[in-house]
Amino acid sequence: MKAMKENNLIQEKQVNGFAVKLQYMPPAPKGGEDNSLLYFRLNVTSADGTPLKKTDDSRFSYGVDSLFSFVNVTDTLAPLDVTRVANGALGGFEYMLVFERPQVWSQVNCKLLFRDHLFTNQLMQFPLNGNAILHIDSLSLNI
Image 1 (cartoon, rainbow, N blue to C red):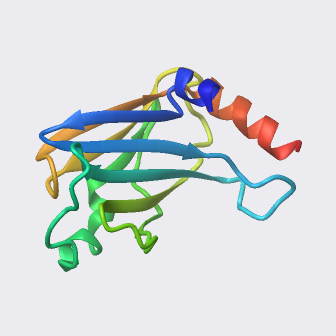
Image 2: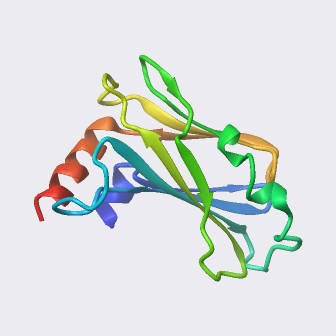
């Protein structure tokens, strides 16, 4: 877990009273998930831990794919899927983001963008290290 934080594979930002946490999800060992895809988990909670209100509004579940993109040197990718996870947590939202793994991508400079008009009204950038993603994937797939 410490190595994932040091390599920006887990990041948290405090913006306008919200805590936004992004976590890279490596593929399952020995199959299971499609290795041609990149998976991220995004959690949004209030920064002070109080439950969010009016969370049943459909705008938090539909059309959210247009809020995200994966940017690298050669391309900007829209997500293949963004799903709000029904995890039973009352204090916030969790989304699973799925992107196609770029054929050619920067081993160092890439980022995930969140054009957030639902919570913070901010453009958030999460810098990612392509080498760290490849390294954690190789470890995960060889377990």
